[in-house]
Amino acid sequence: GTLNERLYALQDANWNVTSLIDTTGTIQERYNYSAYGTPTFLTPSFGAHSSSSFDWETLYAGYRFDAATSLFAVRHRVYSAVLGVWVQRDPDVFVVGPSLYEYALELPLSMADPLGLVAIVLGGLGLAGLATALGISLAVVLGLLVAGWTIAQIIAWAKRRRNGCRRNHPKWDECTGPPIVLLTF
Image 1 (cartoon, rainbow, N blue to C red):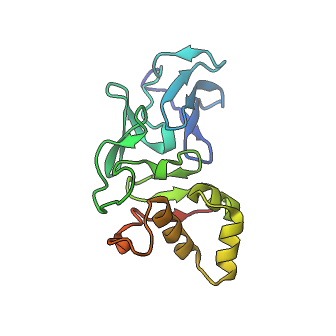
Image 2 (image 1 turned 90 degrees about the vertical axis):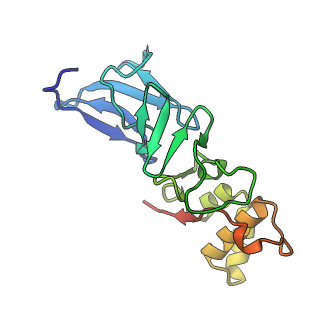
């Protein structure tokens, strides 16, 4: 591209840049991603490229991509889509669980982490989406709500359960890991 071009990025509901268009609305380049965000660069007619023809940096989940290292710069941390994990540990929270470097609770299709600090449930998924993201059934979520639990309590319980913690766990209060935020669009 030239410096006098004006291009616009089109994004999907998960903030992934899916294509670049010019001022006439003509698609100039397309992007596709693996589940954890490894980009594939495509021509307007979906042919493969080895790299972006426009050196476009903002790609998966709106993160800045460094083509030389294949890493994404995300406000507080660096993310490797190839490995599907953060390169650094969470700067604020010690996480008790299977991985101190996991991305979006290892649920990249239904969650994102736009700041590198907090996993969020994507796009108006409702209770069924929340249940799926947390790895529990909708019936369990509904039962807990009927019993008077709040969404925050259900999320904390599900994360403790997912991390193998039970009520007698010595670090019960620390066992939830980073917070989850439920977002709707």
